[in-house]
Amino acid sequence: MKNNIRIERAIKNITQADLADQVGVSRQTINTIESNKYVPSTVLALKIARIFGKCVEEVFILEEED
Amino acid sequence: MKNNIRIERAIKNITQADLADQVGVSRQTINTIESNKYVPSTVLALKIARIFGKCVEEVFILEEED
DNA sequence: TACAAATGTCAAACATATTTGACATTTTAT
DNA sequence: ATAAAATGTCAAATATGTTTGACATTTGTA
Image 1 (cartoon, rainbow over the protein chains, first blue to last red):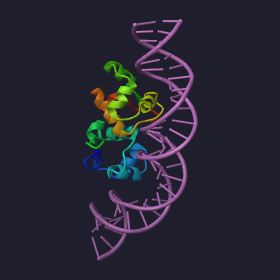
Image 2 (tube, chains in turn blue, red, cyan, yellow):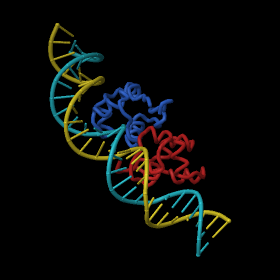
Image 3 (cartoon, rainbow over the protein chains, first blue to last red):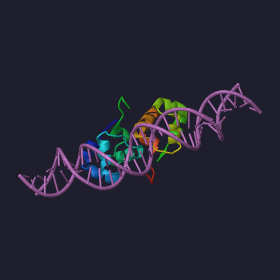
Image 4 (cartoon, rainbow over the protein chains, first blue to last red):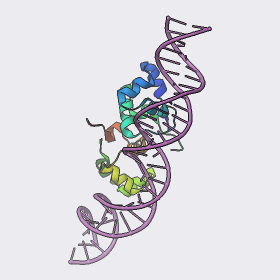
């Protein structure tokens, strides 16, 4: 699964730490998700998408291997 | 977080085992998610929503406590 | 009623997500 | 060029998701 968090952050001009604060997780959690090191829970995905004003499918994209 | 899996299954008239097969997890995983015992990963939520032809937000709903 | 299908649930094992703290590297602004 | 801010990353600990197998309960149907 890939994601557009970096791009959406750039559009809103917020840092990883900002996003982490807004969704209530650690900065490392955002960093690691953004780097595709692991897949967030659905609660976290919903919160992140909401911050960006997008639906989950627009931020997190399924790939063949998923 | 709540979800509408039971309702969506009823609409499509498929069993928990059917849904589990289609998304590639065990039946217990579907049962436990449906019973709000835990929150699925985003990959799984995306797959489930796709089976139902809905976006993730229509199937999984954030609540106050999340 | 009785049988089959579907669902609920438990425990144990394993896999993955998340946190914290710390430090290195890169980017941005002065 | 320098300092500050932002990002990358590591290790260890904890929390949560997922699987398997098994069995109990409920629901639908003959």
